[in-house]
Image (cartoon, rainbow, N blue to C red):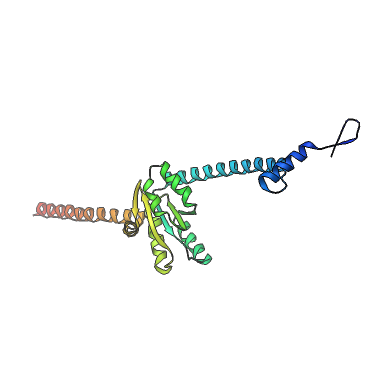
Length: 212
């Protein structure tokens, strides 16, 4: 009950009105002031969630833009020990391993013009980002899946092109960058060795002719 200026109690018409409206609409007592505060809090939470969502999408976009190779894999069924070992193997190869909500990854990919990746993002899917060697994520995940059958390669992105699971397996067969460079240098070295041999033979031939 409220009080008048003369401190005598008076009828709380607003309270009775709120009570009657609550009973009429909800069939029970209803505190409109409390509900107003709850609605206000709900809006605040929703706003914070939206900001967090935008931040995550921006984060995924940045990683996708920087990565030379990206592999998506289904990890359901891996144990904690398996996951720890996998992350260790990837980290040692300079590969970053993340798990995001598929909806956020889809949004990030769409903003980068990679709409086609959404069809591969079903169920628990992890993402491996290779920043130096585009084949490293595929190679490590494939090797790991040989002994851990629960890990399944889903798709990949290399230089803006989407690869399906079969193409990712083919990508995994490509040796590391340092091995390719070593082979390339080796291919250069062989002809140079032959050339040096030929030049040396010519030199010895001339020396023999001069002595004659």
